[in-house]
Length: 576
Ligand SMILES: Nc1ncnc2c1ncn2[C@@H]1O[C@H](COP(=O)(O)OP(=O)(O)OP(=O)(O)O)[C@@H](O)[C@H]1O
Image 1 (cartoon, rainbow, N blue to C red):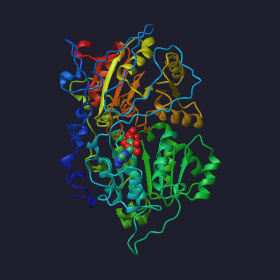
Image 2 (image 1 turned 45 degrees about the vertical axis):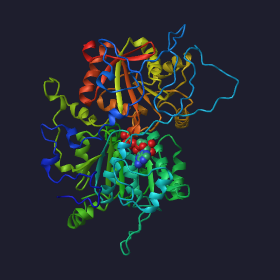
Image 3 (image 1 turned 180 degrees about the vertical axis):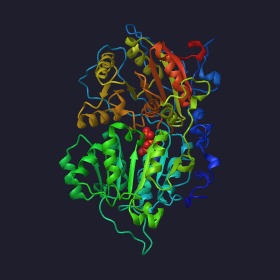
Image 4 (image 1 turned 90 degrees about the vertical axis):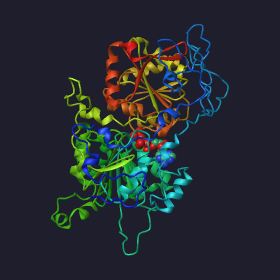
């Protein structure tokens, strides 16, 4: 066995000892790397006491012995003018349903009365995700475990159980696990075990004295960057939260530079542009840095970030493997200089290749497996059998999306004319009785129009895009998370990393450009094993794209329509 991973929970960490066990061979798709997911996940998530529609040629999930909120028939009154169904309460095990603005009113109702407090529903988390061991078993320091317990975090998710020992053993790692599975803490916890006030006590004579920034976390968007900062702050606690510094774009740069000087943070989290800007100005000293994390690495390695990422990779930690002494001292010495951790739900082969060239004995960590990257070979396109387009260079990108989706998600698509999309969106939200909805479009301009149309029909909606300032963006998110708006209409900006646990429906008002983008958008719902539904609304001429994505992602994306306040799921043959 080439790698020693240390004391790890037996059921969780399956370290590949030979290439033949886990290799992605020419005929073995990428997904074969992982062990089977938590069983029964998908089906149990939908058990409820719903009435199921069963109608002749129409296939319902009940006929497949899977119950879904999509299937229950609701005896809803239909609005006299809009023909729109009235929302009814849902028997779904959710705690409380906040009252939404009636869909019958054509204009948003303005009332002089004080606003009733928004009661947010709680979506249930699937316990199968926590089949793994306790934080104690993973060897985290007691102080850190105390802090986690105070935050209500008592057991690690599967990907955390797999990652924490690997990172603690100083391996460079690529962490791949589906959206909402807890990847942020999967890398933050072992890092915070090694640096700062919560770190584990070192054996006598083995204490490394370090000062300055010890970890740099890079994320592609301000929102994701700030979300990671908040996670670190929560763990560090109020007295030590100054030890994490945000370096995101759009915020005041000189204030960030002052804070770096004054607070002497041990960890910085930021966007590539701002980190490299401050580094180039000589205000960010990262030579002693022990950890470099690239969150959403496949996006960070895209052309847009090339120059900034180049600088970051050159300046964070000492350059690996170039000095003659590091050659003499061997891989262990080089390894101590910087640990590189790459994270995403979608890992194309380009990331594996990059990780190999930056890392020392790097491993690929997934929820139930850890394999040396050396054992991974270029995957053959998934669609090679019988697909004439299978040699297209985009295939490796599509391949990356496999296993990126939470198993608790339901996927549908429906077709409509372009000018009826917003109407279909409204019908869909009512039929599924969704309360916290993220609707994605491809461009910024039409977002406002959609918001206007929804508001005009009494559905509280707000837009989020990159043209808004940093403050406006964070205000929008705060209000949406607080339940002040039912629909967030947004673009690709919100597709990655955004964690809004209450989100129960994602809608694609424009189809995503490929299955990787589909996966990240879809992953905004169904977080941490909660229920979630994804509906793509497209034109008839685009339906083939959905069928293609279904193949590429390896999930059922069922054709459906929304009529009379309910969803009707079709057999695929009905629409072909
Ligand atoms: N062990 C745990 N116990 C309870 N909640 C957890 C645990 N770990 C993470 N969470 C919560 O789960 C949610 C999802 O975590 P996170 O955002 O890290 O997922 P992710 O895998 O990075 O998703 P994405 O790929 O979309 O970025 C967050 O709200 C986080 O606070």
